[in-house]
Image (cartoon, rainbow, N blue to C red; front, side, top):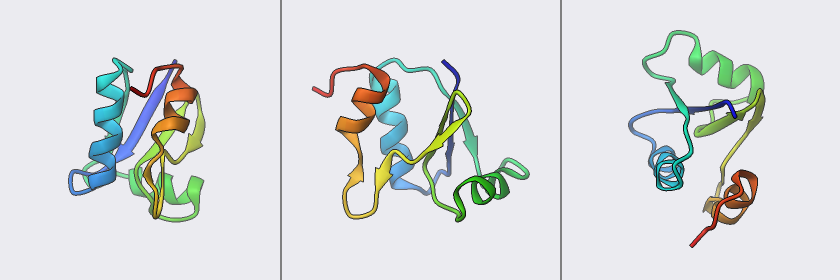
Length: 85
């Protein structure tokens, strides 16, 4: 499994996404859009806006949160085959 997480230090939802991954021992490569040249442009090119966090799982882009709902625990637990308890 190849997982990249586009994030930024100031992003609360990004911290929650990384906490979920770490809690479930899911390996990921973090790409900080503030410090990695071209990373913010990659997000915009693939998502249409500068919205983080973004997961890129085996080349497929997806948002692990939804405005108004926050981090999508149930959906991400199902995606990664882990328990959400």
